[in-house]
Structures are given as structure tokens and as C-alpha cells.
Amino acid sequence: FQIAHFKLVGCRLCKMSTPSSIYSFHRRCLLRIIPFIVIFVGCFRVAGALPSSAAVYEKQSNFQFSHPLVLEGYPPAVNEFKSNDHLKKPMLLYLPGFDGTLVCPFLQFPELGTEFDVRGLSMEMSDRSTFEELRDGVVNYILSALNIREASGYSKDVYLMGESFGSVLACAVSLELSEKHDYIVRGLVLINPATSYMRSQLYLEAPLVANQKMPFYLFGLLTLLPMFADEYQFDQLLLMLSSEALPSIIDTPQRESYMGRVAFSLANKLKFMPRDALFHRLTKWLEDGNKLMTRERLSDLSKYNIETLIVAGERDKTLPSVEEASDLRRIIRNSEIHIVNGAGHSSTSGSRVDLTALMRGYFTTLQESDGRKEMKVVACNGKGKYYGMEVRDIPEGLSPLL
Image (cartoon, rainbow, N blue to C red; front, side, top):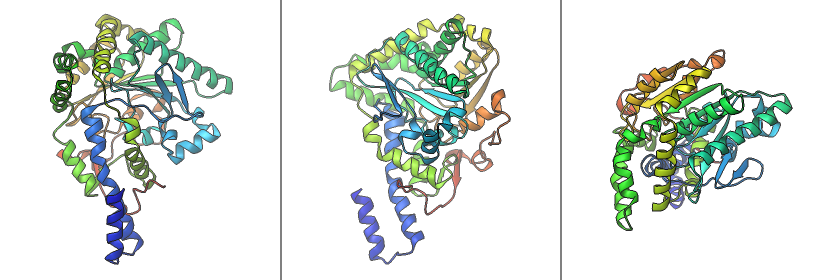
């Protein structure tokens, strides 16, 4: 904040008094915080808790369900929430990786909110739920939400989006709902599914780190960072820092403002993952989840003809995601694959993809939507660091007050 203040003072001293020049400089100053988003989210993948709100925050044990766009004060979502119009849309429940946060796909949420009532699961650092307890907690939450929607006469369609560990959980939840509650989810989105964990680089390296004592544990965490990143993340950061380009899905002043607010609130969301928490999540979540969701068990999804979109980062070094996507395509009938150009594990749901467009283009019930069904042409035509980005200059963009 002090840096931004001094820069704005400097603008005035230099007589940069026109609204466009002040807004432009203000935008560049605020964008200086964007590296921390990717450094913490894309590399450390540590867990954090969302700020509570009695109206939009429902706590079960040490994991929570929330409306992320409402919590961040995104005006379209807030207005819909106040009028209950969000219930008229199908519900999309995002299930995160073992980091337990909703930060990784936050760029996607505003566009997803044009089609869905976006909700998300997050886990606190102290959470020691088993895989089955997480599964049952998600199932109960969905059933409760469906009861409210049915009583009010609103949409009962539910889509599940799972990322990494969340994909394992999403598959388990879908089967539990179908087999025990006679409810079939409308669609599944599996992003870098960790159903391949037992064959992954993460499986080889992370347990060794979790068994280290301090301070070697910290050094071990640093050795894990490269497997989460890709070669374009830093260059795309520079594009955003210089205001040369922004993700194509952040294409309005309100969305840029939302991006700024999320960045300013990262201190409340991201917390250091202790050694015992890492060990618990590797063993009780990932390992136990993979033992339950075998290839035979995953094939049961075909019995219910659930439309499944599998999204994989082309350069994921954490999990063999492209190979796993092909395997799942053979196992799960009525499934489709999308490979995200140049994306590593942590950036697959970031700036190099338009998840809403993919979903509109694939899921039958969304194909009548007026929204775009492919990523913007300018973003698709970008090469290397420009892929998924849109070059533009909106001086009044990134004000967290909008």
C-alpha cells in the first residue's frame, strides 16, 4: 500500500492530473501484487481458510462451503444472491486440490458465474477429515442445497468441478449420489485428475518431504516447487505487471477489480501447511482416495451416463495428467478431453483456458447458452506467453473499490 501511495504522490508531483493517467498508474501499482498470487498459489499450494460470513458461509467440521464470488463482493453475484436469482441457475460446486483453497481457479469464477451458481469447498489447516468424511460432507451439502431449491421451485441441476485431489473426490461424490440417493449430477469436470497419484512424481517425492523435521521440511518444500510450475507463468506475470496484457477472461473493469480484491485478501486465505497436515493429506486423502477410486470403480460412472469433461495441463509435471486423461476417456463412457496448451499443474485452471466456454461447448444442457463456446480468438492465437492473454489497456480497470 505504501508503494502504491508513493507512486500516486509521484504522479501528482509530476502533474499527471488527468483521470486517465492517474487510473492507469493506479492500475499498474495494484498489479504489482499479482506475483504473490502465482508464487503462493501456483508454487507453494498451501492451504488457507476463507473469511467467514453468516449469510454465505456454512461450516461443517473443519471444512467449509461458500459462495466465493459473493464473499469477494463481486457485484453481479452479490445482486443475484440478495434477490435469490442465483438459485435459478444450475449449481456448480468446485472441489479443490489437497491445498484446500479456492484461490487457484479464482480467475475463472466471474465467467463461470454467468452460467452457474458458483460454490466451493475449502479445508482449514487443522482439518483431519478422512476421505470418506469429506465425501459424505459434500454429499450432505448437495442434498441440503437440492432440498432448498426443490422447495422454492428452482433449478435442481448440479455440476461438480474437481481439480487434482478434488477430481478424485468429485468422482466419489457422483457415485455416492447416484447409488445411494438416486440423484445423477448433470456433469463432471475433472482438472488434472489425481486418480493417477500413485503413478506420479508427487507420490515419489512429497512423502519424503513430509517425513522431514524442521528446518529440513522447509527445504524439502522448496524442492517440490518446480514440479508445479510451467515455463510461461513468470512471463505472463510480467505481461500483467506491465499492463501489456491480462487473461482474456478478465475482460471488464468489474472483473479486474475483483482480481485486485482477491490479491489483497491473500493473507487471509493462504497459510503455511505444517508437516503433519501435508502427511495427512497425502495419506488419508490422496492415497486412500486412490485406493477407493480404482479403475473398476471409476468405470461405474459409465452406468449413469454422466457427461464428463477431462481437462489436463499439457506440461503437468506433478501428475501424468495427459496420460491419465486418455485412460479415463477409455474408462468413462460419454467423456471428452481438453488439453490446455503449455499449462503446468498449477496453471491449468488459470489464464490459459476458458473453462466456462469449454463447458458450454461440451455439456448438452448448456449448448443453448448465448455465451461463447470457445476461448476468445485473440487468446487462442497467442503464442507462448501470450496464449490465453488479451492485449489491451483499460485505464479505469483495476480499482478494488468497484
